[in-house]
Image (cartoon, rainbow, N blue to C red):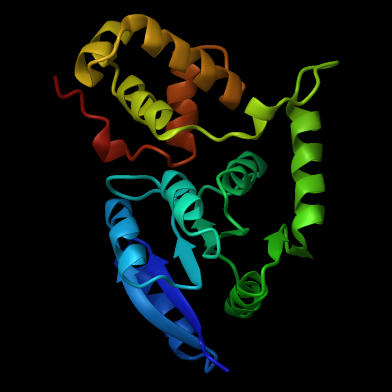
Amino acid sequence: MEPIRVMIVEDHPLFRQGLHRIIDAASDLELIAELGDGGEVMEQVRRSPPDIILMDVNLPTQNGLLVTREVEAEFPNVGVIILTAYHDEEQLFHAIRSGASAYYAKDVKPDHLLACIREVAHGHYVINGEVMNEAQMATWLLKQFEEKAPAGAEPNEEMFIPLSPREMEILNFITKGYSNKEVAYRLGISRQTVKNHMTSILRKLDVNDRTQAAVYALRHGWIRLQDTKYDK
């Protein structure tokens, strides 16, 4: 049987080394690449597609959720397991919505992670430690929407869509303190288009204003603190 091909995407050298050792110790796994920057992932996946990607969220250049969405759009057979220090139910919700097959905090036990890799490689999902098939995952996701939606609101198609690359780009600028006018100038789009995107961002994150959206992004590691310098 061919080994399960694993890629590690993690910018913290010590944690990346720990993952390397765990993968190396498993006879049925093969480590094919280690990356520390989200912006390098797609090029590497196109060059040598893995079966599984172990993906951090708080990465340079592009955060792990956005990278996950790009991977799943182009390589739907690649399973992504999110590993993050920002562990909460909201982050889990966004991870699965972005296309991840599993999600763990970084204090996960090695044997649990190895079991998860094998389950995901066989097309399963692992949510809160429970192995699910696609139908069960869809039921779980719908339940999350129902719990998060305002009373009496019906889940709609947009609720199943994570933040787009453009929305994530705008959120990055907002977190740096840019006004809608400045964002529009930077991106070469109209102020109304920025406002429309902001409306979508607030709705998807279930927050009331741009400040709350910025705090949300920082709290979940979508935007790196060192990347928030106002650089007009």
